[in-house]
Every structure is written in structure tokens, then in C-alpha cells.
Image (cartoon, rainbow, N blue to C red; front, top):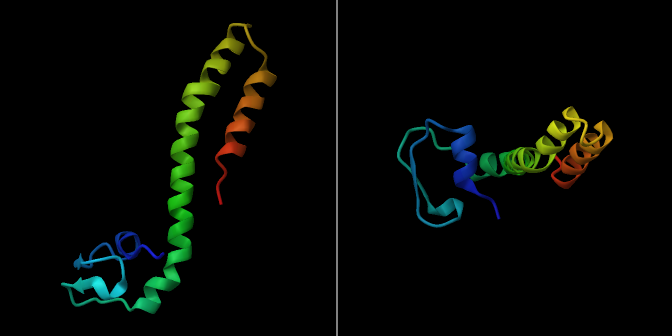
Amino acid sequence: MTDYSAILRRHFPNVEYVMNGDTYNGITFLSDQQPTQEQLDALWPQVLVDINNGMAQANRHQAFIAEADPLYFAWQRNEATEADWLNKCAEIRQRYPYT
């Protein structure tokens, strides 16, 4: 399902609107600029990629803090190997890929 609100926030930040439902017909534009449903639908694939990449970035950030950083510092103290740390970094990147 197309998230018209997400598209409008990202690509039309100055357009004022009110949402009454999840469909294009539920949008009431309050400003002169009124993108068409076709314009918004064409932008949805890229917005979805942006949303997914943002979630992957946030998940990676938390995983690096919780899992990779401790291994990095253990490696610095000679309590783990560089390979342990690098393998964990690669595992995190694979777990949360960018599209």
C-alpha cells in the first residue's frame, strides 16, 4: 500500500494537507500545490527504499554499538582478534542490508 503521507513529507514538505484515510482520495490539500495521484505513485518506490534504508541504518547503528564495538575494544586490549571484530561487522551489514 502506498504511504501518501510519507511521500508528501519527503518530496512536498511545503504542501499543506489533511489526511482522512490512507488513500489519495482521503487527502485534502490546503495549499495551491496539489500533486496528482500519478505523481505521488511514481515517487513511492524510491520513498520505500529510503524508508527501508533508514530502518537498516538505525538497526546497524544499534547492532554496532551492542555487538561490534565491544569486540573492537577487546581487540585493542588483545582479548579478541581483529578478525573477530571484522567478522562481526560483516555479519551486521549482512543482517541489515541496504537496498
